[in-house]
Image 1 (cartoon, rainbow, N blue to C red):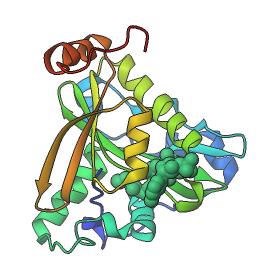
Image 2: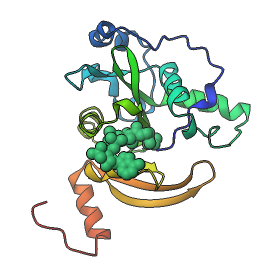
Image 3: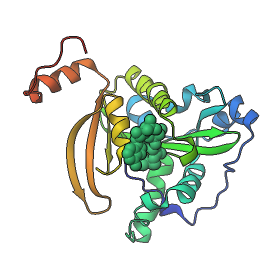
Length: 232
Ligand SMILES: CC(C)(COP(=O)(O)OP(=O)(O)OC[C@H]1O[C@@H](n2cnc3c(N)ncnc32)[C@H](O)[C@@H]1OP(=O)(O)O)[C@@H](O)C(=O)NCCC(=O)NCCS
């Protein structure tokens, strides 16, 4: 998943990204965020933030709807090295403006929070009519733990997307990103491609089928090697 958030580096951080735990849990922030005409809403009538805030751990980590400013601040602070600028690109002013518009109005933005602090983010959007692309998924180092990430992905992404008839989730990661590669494997993603990109370098593409019929077709058409075990 290629982070690409730095285009709006001059944008004012108008929306505070430090909310009190009570505010986070109340859902007030979710309701106060301006209704956004995301691509998911436009295409599928899906608002990923509708089931949020959602408590994910007993020690108080929540998934909440996030503002662009909140997501941008997290990436700038924790993962600058994943941005195209952090990787040595210099997008022009026009591209930077379009990037901010794309990310702030078109994409779904979710934050993971703990005691008012942003500890993780997810940025995604439809890639085509039946595929959802996860552009960025990252947690602060202290909060990386498989039980949390898997629960978040299953309950806040897979389940609502599947309910809206989305057939697959796609994502890219650098082949050296072992944590991400392991996460994909455990969540049942298949390798479905590889690219050498101008901005992100080498990427492996992964696909998770949400629709069992699509997964069956995938096996029938391309899984010509070892037969699958009957009960997997
Ligand atoms: C990718 C990410 C979301 C996965 O989170 P997670 O599932 O909680 O994963 P962890 O980081 O705890 O790692 C999970 C497993 O991967 C393996 N792993 C992680 N980093 C590894 C490394 N450098 N070398 C070998 N194995 C590694 C470990 O086995 C670990 O399991 P263990 O703790 O039981 O040993 C998280 O690691 C992260 O936020 N990384 C930084 C951001 C990122 O790379 N995002 C993707 C690109 S946008």
